[in-house]
Image 1 (cartoon, rainbow, N blue to C red):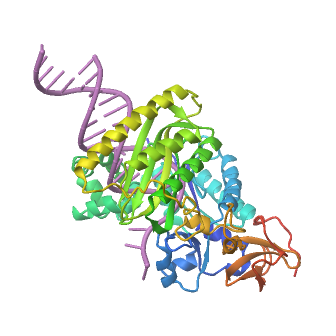
Image 2 (image 1 turned 45 degrees about the vertical axis):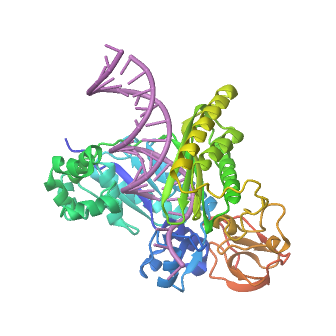
Image 3 (image 1 turned 30 degrees about the vertical axis):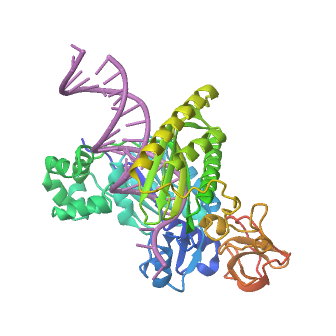
Length: 490
DNA sequence: TCTGGGGTCCTCACCCTC
DNA sequence: TCTGGAGGGTGAGGACCC
């Protein structure tokens, strides 16, 4: 029996960049690139205008600037994107109780479960209505794919982009998929794609011809079986509305590699604290602590430790992360540090006795490992240094601080900053309010000046004015809603 | 001047217990 | 008593996704 095409996949077009264009009228029709602006930043989203220059997601920002030197480069404003996403997801939930968000800008909807569609005609009608509603409520365009399965609905929305709608009729899947690249299929990334290419398989049709046994031999049991089924257009994964988080983690890439062991320890402690904050905010505790280290040469390693019971105690997570760090050689430099917690539970076990036992056991293991390392490495003691001295050396915002901290809008946070660092910072793209000129956004800043464009969603493109960075009339402000506000002429 | 951040899932190695 | 295999827990790494 063929499934009716009532699985809907929604994909907002170039979401972050489109939100920025909607919120900043002067950027409409221009190349807009959203991402990390530090020396190690990458592109999160590029507007379609920027894509014409070859800029795309995950590209190093430096490369994007070479390709598109006149583009507008902005840091992401997740709180704004989240608020727009909430509006879109609410519209989807009006269609069905079975909505599976994949990210802020993407979701699956089971229309049949919501009794909003039962065949191709009603599904198409629902898709059209949804796109119109999203445009009216957010001012943004979305692409919609409709098919009998999640995989095909996603392929359909991809084909429909930008600002389109496509329904894959049951029975036409194999013919449609056959000429497409294997990379179209979910789960086929650069590594698997290259693996298949070396075996002479570049299209979905060739994948189907290869047969299940051959694919299992090439990429392993689980992946091979799944790939073969998808090549035939078969996918019976249900739309799942509620998914429990399995891990919580935070990580920072540093503008400059860290070498000082004391500084590295301090950063790990900070990350552990931030991780626990996120863990608690999500109402979880966790049992396994994971330390992630990316070294100067981009090699990445993880070290983990499983406690006797779940914890959300910052001291316990800090100590575990510190123990794990002691087992890692950081000579040569560290470009990224991360701390994560997995094995999540929705309760906290205040079993301090168990935790301390685990800590003792881990410490004993650490000592053993250290002893082993000392016998196998050539004088590699990690350059510990013990007393350290400069315990304030690792402040975010200082050279080598996390890119994210350096880009923060408004005044630099943290006590003990030297005066120059207290100077107000204005991140490109952030919203401001001027006592005289009203709402606007930061177009750029430097050498004690900040340039602001005074415009807002719904207004015509505005004028640019420059101020001293410490101008008391200028304040950071919250983003304005994209639609539904009347804007006075001016 | 290469390569973010926050996730999930899978595989493999190793150890331990039965 | 020794050996081998199955299976679970843990740790590490890789691939992939948005």
